Image 1 (cartoon, rainbow, N blue to C red):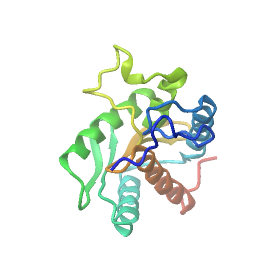
Image 2: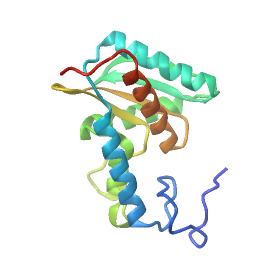
Image 3: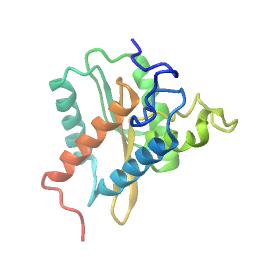
Length: 187
C-alpha cells in the first residue's frame, strides 16, 4: 500500500521522500543530500576484514530479526560475497536489488541512496540518463560503502526489502553500532 501523498497534497515543508516522485522542495532534497554526505564521512572504519564482515552481517541480522523485517542482507567486496542472509519474508527479487544497488555503490563509491538523490536534482531521475543501465544498477537506497581510513572503500553492505530510505538507515544503524563497539579508528 502506498501512503505517499498525491502531488496536490504534498507538504512543501516536509523532508524529502525518495519514494515520492511528485514535486518536492529542492531545499529538502539538498538538506537530505547534505545529511547523507555528512553521515558517510562519519562512517569511516580503522580496518575491515572477513571476520568484521561476519560481525557486521550478524549485527544486521539481529537488528532485522528483532524487528521482524523481511529483508535480505549482503556484504561483498566486488564479486566476493563475504556475508549473505535472507530473512523470513525476503524474496529472490531482493537478491536482484542487492546486486544492482551494490554495483551502484561500488561504481560511485558512495551510498546508493545518495547517488539516486543527486540524480534527482532539478526534478530529474538518474535513470532518465541513457547511459544508466537499470539492468545493472539501481539508484535506490540500501547499499552503503564500507570505507577504511587510509585505504578507501573495501566492501559494500546492502539491505533490500524495505522502502529505500529504511534499507539505507538499517545499514547505517548497524555501521554506527559496529563503530561504537571496540573498533577504534587507526590514527
